[in-house]
Image (cartoon, rainbow, N blue to C red; front, side, top):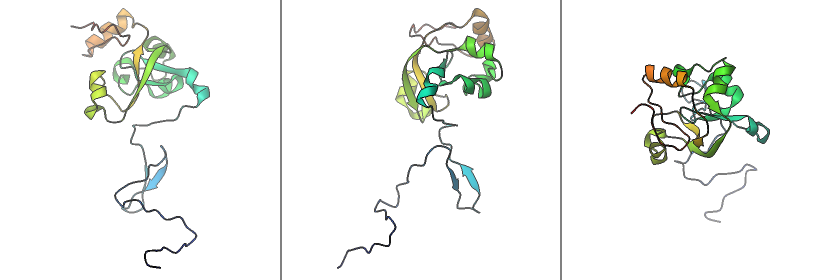
Length: 164
């Protein structure tokens, strides 16, 4: 029959050749140039959080980035590490992050996202952010941020900047 396809025992895709199949985060793929392997890491180190780990999620009080407590300890905040120094410092993680937050926003392209601009997240790393973060930074931390040239916007919904 014209137009009929013979089954070869393998599934065939009829999708447009321009469409790419989504790959799970962290899956390795081979590049066409020389067969070298490369991490498929478009989300800047995206990771999966299991339901059991959700109680360990915390939000940075400076930028509202959300990740598990252990990841703050091992890698710091992707936006604030240079100013806060969370890596290997559990007391800094406890002081600068909060387990109490409201809402979540996932941002893939912060530079082109109107949601990121509206929430003052443009220019930050792609990832998951809290809409509101409950908690206050200490005066020492606020002075440290100001000395580093970081303009701090409270993420608790008050909307007041400490450095106007």
